[in-house]
Image: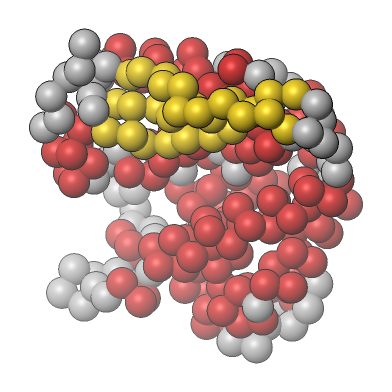
Length: 241
């Protein structure tokens, strides 16, 4: 009953949605298998959610440049927004986890929301994922106009993160072209962290391109910074002056 009311359509496979709410700590170590937790569904849902909001933003802001769309999407799918959205939808009360897992653990609720999107995709496909997200927007759980107007300095956030971790971050101009449709320049920036390019984006101004690239970099870092592979890759690079 909960899932039908939340989704707006009946689940074909209710077990998928229960799995989306299952944190890995809820599975006994001797029987733990990835398919019983929400990690794989979260991975899938993250990609689908980015595509859904790309579709929605393109439709809603047909005249806005790529940099604006990238920054707005990054603000929508950031951890703070998704964590709060999950709470508003009541997912925080559905998550299964071990007692020792902190109720306020960073990303716990947002990850569950992404896993839910992954479950909808597996159960029904992309169209139902978009339909579900659009209904959330109509019900004012997400105010896209307000989010788009809010100013988030992604570049400063990224540089502060680099200072905390003693990493060299460089914004590299990778190219510049002229857009005949807008009669303006398009700037292409890459973000280099200790010799590794971790993100890139384009914008109508240098600042716009840098902000868009920084937003992508922060999202990638947020998802990867806890992995040994990420730290090893970044810290093993020789710092370029």
